[in-house]
Image (tube, rainbow, N blue to C red; front, side, top):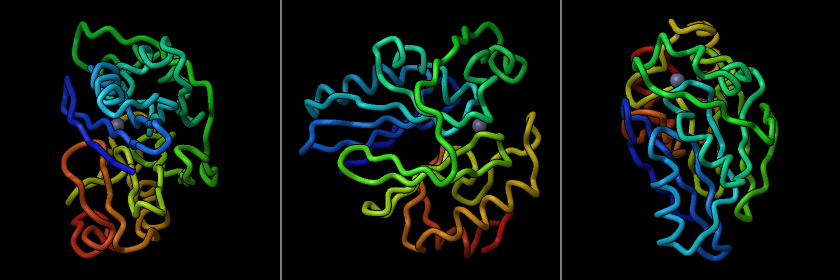
Length: 210
Ligand SMILES: [Zn+2]
């Protein structure tokens, strides 16, 4: 599997592509602005079909382009705790860039902690990691030793917990019980900034120690 990460507008949010060349399929995780164009170009390069869009959480900067994937008939996955944000993203407009158009994202597959998605010929484990946002999930790819985590943790930092539905104690609990329990060598792909690893954050994250 090839894992590609791309920082996209308007505030530098990462979209992740999981590409399986043998099956000619790919899965996209998160949809900032321009994600659909980026994903379709990538899919074309690899002669792949986009078989799923997984949204790590409902914050506007992660779902802006979600409507375009839905319009193309691509199945979309999200956690029900963020239903309101998927259905009416403009409710978050006071936290977004003024004047930005935010369209609803119809979720076709509701996911929750403990689910296993069978996509791209591999098992993807869903872990629920609230604290930054009530419906934040991470996608753990055991065979790839990789986890796509949304905004729960970043290289040397953690997600904001001052937005609606945020809570530091819940975030800390999520990180300790769901992120730091992944194998040490797991590469972490956060929603913003560069990659890190479980062992690196356990050893030196200034907010939550392992
Ligand atoms: Zn967020």
